[in-house]
Length: 252
Image: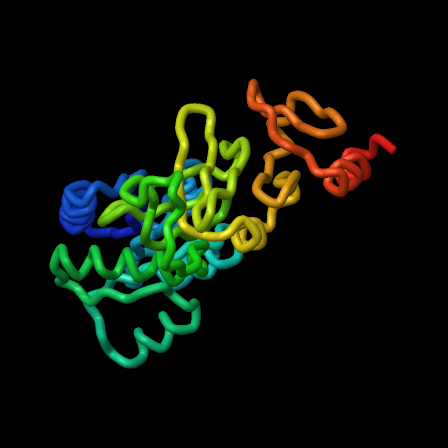
């Protein structure tokens, strides 16, 4: 689920925002009323997106919070404000918010702003395809956009996102135009190529063992000349990949 931090110094508005967000199945990880509280919650709760009032009380306002988010946390920000004057908008533009909402706004406007902000924050991991794999149920696959924020992959299914911690992906299997992402307790399916997905991940712990397989080396339990084992699953290892893996693991 998408975790959202609210930074709003008017408690009634913050409570109303919380109600709206939870009714749309977002998770509100906290509500801050000033700069210091916002930074503390950012450090402890690791939200995926921040709803941020520009006009916070105190020495540091919402723009200051956004500057720190950009420097330290690298998260999408949606500014909320009652002011639409040119000076306010210009200040907000300098910190590159993912979206901007003018109060009061409706539930549908909030949902749209969040979805657009998340989608645009990172380029989708999906690639378009017209053919389906005979071994994959298309209804089971995440057939809309997936994207990566920090250490998590977000897979969209209809109107909701499933959050997958990248570190929890044990191994990946390509099956036609689809990928099976194998986690400890489940399998997620997305529509993309293995090459495109690994390029998008850009993570050293993922190693391609075969044209149709990649593994998370952090979960490696056994290594043989023609295969590797993740938990109890044996995964093929090509001759070329075997040599590369040996060098990578500094065995030779």
